[in-house]
Image (cartoon, rainbow, N blue to C red):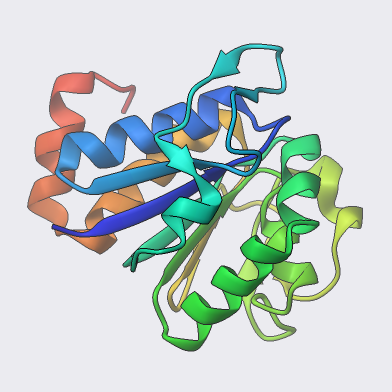
Length: 184
């Protein structure tokens, strides 16, 4: 069973974080949500969430994928956490899957995971928060090698389903997607 780490920082975009965790778990992935503070995480809209564990505890394990939810404040909090920077570098060096949505691709850009030759997308209002990469303005989702980025809350389902397809296969994606009755 693939293992996925989803770090949750105060200010994370609730729709993105919860949809990512939910969809990947429906597919059968072992998803570990990890609080940077080790306590309750407050989302960008003021909702409060309990992560599965603290980031320190989560980092004792190995993962096939790490996925960063967005939210401008949440992404900045992820970016400034040295533990997140370290796990991103390790996952990137091992060519493990890395996903980021909304403002979170800036975390990848600012830590050198998205270099000049890597295509990406993100929430356009946050483009100036990072440096590097080749921005694809009209794309809702971009796969560039083992890195997948997406534009924002409205793309959270397609982003999460694409991650399912990468971790598993097309049939698993379809099995998970069908009962959701998402728009065509």
